[in-house]
Length: 126
Image (cartoon, rainbow, N blue to C red; front, side, top):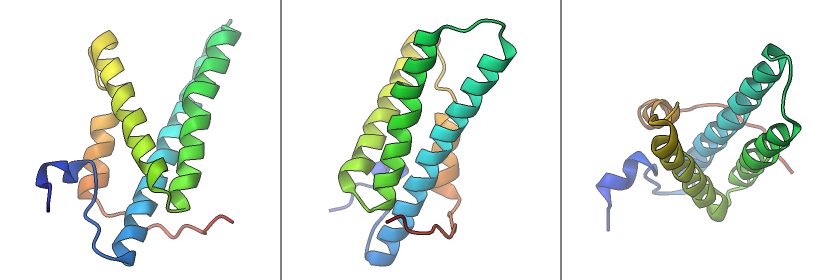
């Protein structure tokens, strides 16, 4: 049974090779989200004279660390981690749309990882 409409969120998987490729794509996407969030947080701290410690820790513990952990488990071929990343990203995108009237950079990530094959050589962890 094929769900062609869901292929924008989930790449087609036929065998072990396509599963490894999908896991690499998920790992790179999760690390990009985590890394860009960390860079934007560092820029925000450096550019402002004062910062709120509560906001700093909530951004680290609420956005950066969970995505980095999810990326680690996606690289270990965890299906639960990949579904968690999808749910977390969609939930965050819906929140941004409802509060800030923008989807942020997520549509660019979806377009990039859907239409551009990722052929990175990632060293297995563990």
